[in-house]
Amino acid sequence: MKLIAHRGNVAGRSPHENAPGHIDAARALGFDVEVDLWVQGSRFLLGHDRGEYEVPLEFLLAEGSWIHCKNVRAVDAMIEAHAHWFWHEEDERTLTSRGVVWTYPGRALSRGAIAVCPELAADDWKLDVAGGICSDHVLDWRDKLMPGELSIESNHGPERCSAPLP
View 1 (tube, rainbow, N blue to C red):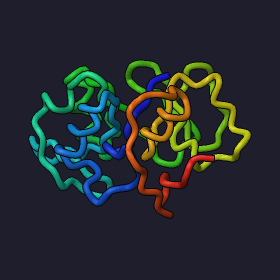
View 2: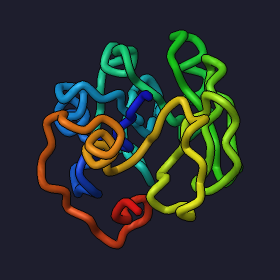
View 3: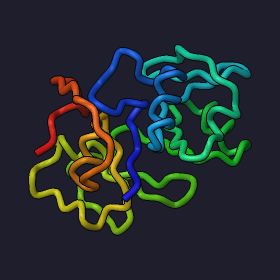
């Protein structure tokens, strides 16, 4: 199962989410990463509510990047770059540019879909059909799904997409 660090978070929400160093640290642990992208002019900016961290296009094209486009310019730029991207707001599910279903927490999963923040879903959310999990707690999910792998202490907080695992 593919494990994706939501905004680069691996052990709970962080004030450094979407920061390039934070993303690189998650990649160094072997996780794919979901990043929030804004494009302003010719600048590529990471950040959830606004673009904060400028990065080169090559950073976004790294293997294992799942790019959440936050404005139309980001969509256009990622199409041109042939990147792995998606757009959604409050949709129950969306399709990434590579044909993967990205599923909102707690919504019905299709086979091979990415389950987003399953720690927020009801305990009966059936993850057996999921192709991956995107979470702020990918270290916990790795421990739960692949026991024996390296782990570190988690920092569970009350923030959205940051609840402790069931």
